[in-house]
Image (cartoon, rainbow, N blue to C red; front, side, top):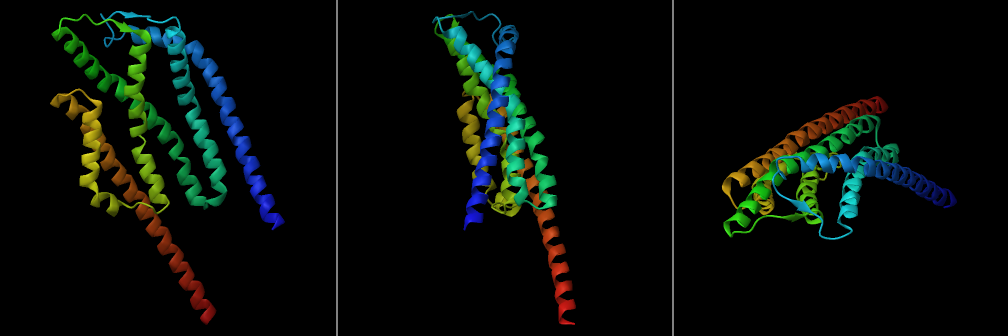
Length: 257
């Protein structure tokens, strides 16, 4: 009983140590984000998305809030690979050697998809929404004039969800490796998944068919990519199981003899 308690304590100690490492990296990345936030904000202000639309400060704390938002996002993006690596190191002792090597590839893939989702949200979805909002304001004779806090807050609310949505293939692969999902089950619920992703795409885009299609199609392709990756993981699991059963039966035959 004492050994088990010590094992639990050791696991908790290791978990605390890894959390401290992740928080330390996040704080450093957050500080670096403050220095990178200014040039990044200036660059985004020159983008065609905001070109020609005055962006003003409506509150004394607007500039600081925007700096904090950008620094936080930079910190999250920079810390994500480190956090995933420490999660992998924490759970890897309970994995087999081949599972340990295979799950390590999830780290760069998840980081890449998160950044890709943010870029997709900013360069595809956000311009369509801003164009729709601007045209709507012009249709009622109102000149657009955005507060910097509201403008960038609205932008973050649009682009960050796509960074999360683009994690779908990684989540599916992870759940497949845990044998919670499999490609047959994913294919069986394809219609419901398509419906859910369509609702998400329509909700996050302006009410016009072109914008809906430009967002829904990538989401559906992500789901098909998830099925394909799940199929690869599932086939590898079946092969490993067959090899284990073959080796087990061979050993059993030797014992009988």
